[in-house]
Length: 161
Picture 1: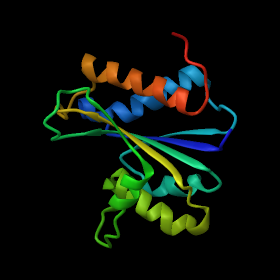
Picture 2 (picture 1 turned 90 degrees about the vertical axis):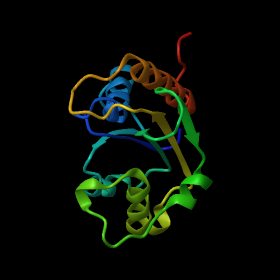
Picture 3 (picture 1 turned 180 degrees about the vertical axis):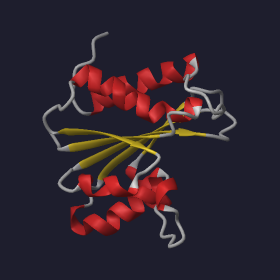
């Protein structure tokens, strides 16, 4: 099994925006707190300091919410590594406490250089509610559960039907 880092982005006090963190918690429940060969990282909203933890991983899987898609809440997207590479940015004005996953990958690539993995996938879940509240909507929570199952399948863990 490839050494894999699974990163969940989002703000857990901004309703559906916190779905990436919820998926990480679901994976911890399903896989246990520290599964062999897999790093489950709740990125929250502060990504920069966590990027060094990616060293030595052969695969990165990212989960985040996405807004303004014109699709219903809960719509799932999976981006291949080629689309992620196209989105990598180099912005010297980025605020370190407000990194998004594409910016985080840009910095990870600079930090890890030759150890930056080629195997990267991104799961995005369409959301519209990012109000200051703790609850995740049912439709987005269901989409998060689907993403959890997709990730488990991707990393080779049998998912019960």
